[in-house]
Length: 509
Image (cartoon, rainbow, N blue to C red):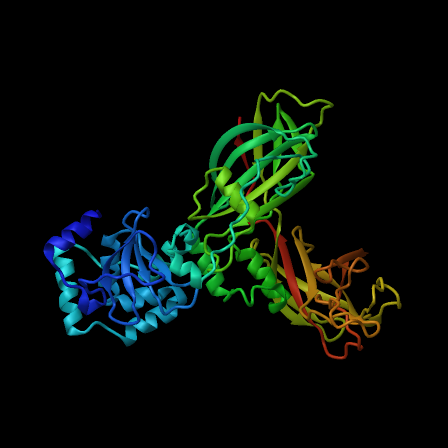
């Protein structure tokens, strides 16, 4: 029995006023888990609080009036923490409902329903007689407990499964197999499995904790797994800032500028260009892939199976987030070598950072901006500005008609930058249209039209150097494509490309 709970029982403190009163009849409800030991009742809607055999001192709330599968939620890792939450919140009502609120809603509830004098008397007894203090950040604590909990481990009675079908069992993890070309998804059995070389190397880089659990020696080359640890608080801060929910977690709901900023801030994203040295010989990767494990996924959603299996295989802490990257490095020799030394250099791919916006009305216009890292002040001077129409058939048909109207701008930068600086259109452009009526069930064009493969990249127009002049290299930028000629002035955006983290080398073997 939990020691604080034993002490609590000896002190005979009555929690009825704060929503966890005792009853002589602790008859369970249909959704009360197997092995539950009920210690308190809210007095409304059958809500009760319990321990569950096999989960130690964790305190659970059972809410029979909730919709499936939200009947049971963990509240605290121990009874002492449960009481500390009560000291911070004044009543179990806030604790029991926290699973469906964000922090602002939680705080609003606490402000609207402060403890009554009777409740304050009970809370005072808890603090004095058990020597406890209020939980510092109750909502954050509850969310972390719930986000790291495996709800699939709770077992119920047949009465529950008569009303709520038991979820289909997930497939068992396949035999762990790492191949040179297969990434995390090759289960065909055709490719030869690499020989595992355990490493267990840990280090800190780019503000993260890293684990290199193993390398794999394949006939074609070396495969290396890199595991970056991500704290749940960082994931929640990111999703809260951008209001990411299952119904809006899609790129189409955000502008390109927002997507660029989200890429910078996403704690589950890191673009790497790792290098290794084997026996003093440098190797560069030819392919890489990654899976991410998010302990904060909403109820009803699960992580990619390959990510879960990787976390389980390497014994990683499932209460934290993980980005597990796999890179393949071809051997520079005809045969697989005997590994005498192995080192890794961590190199970040440059970030694309959105900068200030401007409009160009005519040649000769200037715009001054400052580089966010170097602090160098640049002057952009417009040299030419012209509306253009691309030739018909520039893009493949594929049942779609593509827009062809754009605006071309040539410009110079002074001083000539050593860093990579681009100019792009802030407008996403027009989506391609169907060439003719189609089956309404056939797929629709989702993306916006950019100047793809002709003038810039698929994510938007890019700067192009077209010649040298005394005033600096002449560069070109092209606006996103539209069906109608672009009559209004284009909103341009300066974009910077730079690395936020210095390269670092680590000896692995």
